[in-house]
Length: 589
Image 1 (cartoon, helix red, strand yellow):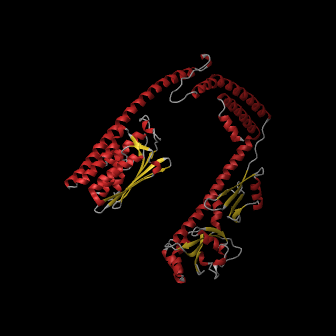
Image 2: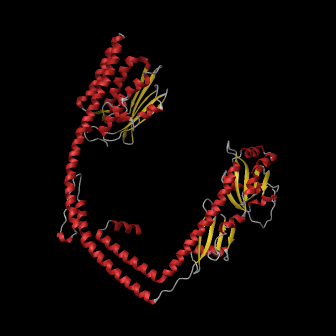
Image 3: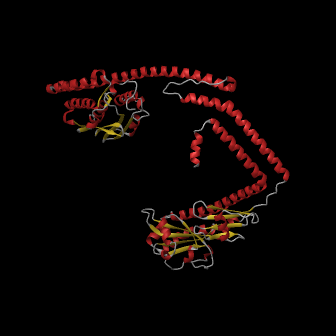
């Protein structure tokens, strides 16, 4: 419901929004004044208690997180020991004890660690205990209530209260244990269990420096809700009930916070001081302030509506009537004295800007048309002699070899090629014609190279009636022959495929030639192709398409040295009739 009202308000006129704004400001201001009148002292006291509560929770949480993180860090050091994993893998009790006793200094120097205990997967164990009080009892740890959970964690640690009942200790003693699986670093299969016991005094020290009078309630709970440590004159069920109902009494603010990194919680209760009672004279002052505020909002709304909102609404209506690339001038209806001077300046400046933009757009548009046509024609004229030179060179080779019939066939193919290339001056030809040009070119090359060159031309019949810029595929096929197949000592294959994909024409030119290294491929990527003078065929083709289609043509190059190269082009689709369009505008795009 609130979202729908927001949408309606968003489309409302500026005068309506101003009315809503001033009314909202008035109501909110009144509410704030009343709140200040009745609860200024109590509010300040509550905010102070909240700040102290947040600080207390953050302090205790960070202290406990640091304690646990330090213990976890030491556990990772133990897990990374190759001696430990080797001894557990071999299930050698003597080796296990020797490898674990390398960490005796850790227990002796770190006051928060009471002991380190380790079992292999057959429950054979060893230990290091502060003052050597606890020892391992000979029982199967696989029967404990935490064993399966630790196994499922697959190396991550868990925290448990009284998990070390497998040790010889008093049943009334409470301990916190960090437990995790020890995995073989090679194949990551479990080889043992590690338990590190932490001293409860270290957890109690996390809040030991706090003032117990100001903060009479502190509980640290584990992930099951059990008490790890506490100081409180209020029972835990009472604290939980107050937190659940979100009801605090007049003297105590209760809050809780999760400890980062695990599911433990810290509960804290902070005392709230009593607020001061408001005097009668204060009520009169606040009532007068509310009246003056209402007058101020009413006058402000009238001025803003008359001299700002009304003129802007007139301007917005004029701007909404703009269409196409032609900007409509705005007209400020009404008497000039009804608006601020800035509104008249805005109208005059905007109308002048509209005239200048219209003229500039028209001039730039014409200049860009001329520039694009010149660039496209220049690139296309460069492609023709480049191909002609290579073709005549091939036919000259055949003539010198005395292959008269092949020369005749070459001339036939060459003539067919140029009939399509000229195509009555059209820049766009059908995909079928482009494929014929590629076929004629490859036939010319086969006459020269014989069985050293093979090709496969596979163009989907569904796209053969679409149109593309001519001489797109032939230069790329020529690159494959000259730079991929010709330097190869064994016969090679050029594969050309054309399909439709997601509204585009997709062409793949692939060869199994000599390929390219990574440096050469980087020279041909989008960022460097324009400045690459060595690869005219690819560079010229990409530049021509970018100019004609008015977009950054999508192409990818993949190559492996000694295995071949693949070029994939994605070109906008054009249909019959598009070849007659204004050639300064890209079809399909």
